[in-house]
Length: 316
Ligand SMILES: [Zn+2]
Ligand SMILES: [Zn+2]
Image (tube, protein in one colour):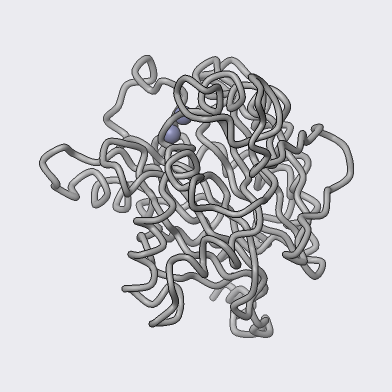
């Protein structure tokens, strides 16, 4: 009889480091459901959001569903718990909540790659689409938000008031620029990835470079989770992906990460949180069910897939 692998239970259960509250988990088409993840060090303190496609409706849903303590005011979350925004790319389903909530927001930084901040200044906070709530672009500047450019490859930047740091890795999204943010707290890390297609379809090497960069964190068991999109079921043809992933492509990309890590067993049970599923206009959750089934058919290197649900808090 073959020797059994060492039981997972031998691994001591580590207390979680990050609280994640999905504020919006979809990739269209409904306002109030598009992509935004609240991320904070465990313990109910201040944090940030990775993307802000939905803010106020997502905060309300999270208060209803226990993502934030019952009785919390939406304004308390918006003003005190969200201390910064990370924006992966300027598509509407990732920034609409930020724009809409801005009149009731308080001063805070927006962290992004320089090209993404430039697009926010040019396309949204430009006195045409919306008043200029920030500090660049068309004057006058209302300066509620301060753009903070992140340069790939430079050491992590502190996000004031959150106990976390962030660094940025560029992604390819159907020819557009998108971003993966590595968020670190207390020596551990969480990766929040914006929209992206597979390297093979994008004719890019950006995911490969990202896997190389984070493989050491997996080896050291410091990577607590990856938040990533899976927009379409496997039936979607490559030429119709428009810069997105399917379960098959995500598993293939995680296979590349496992190769970088070297020891596949270190990926066993790694939480992979799925968002950005493209919903059906008639409200059927068939796409989500199909995607969940396809992901779990053959999870690459034994990772643990979790379908993000609006308002339901996760701990990593
Ligand atoms: Zn999107
Ligand atoms: Zn996009």
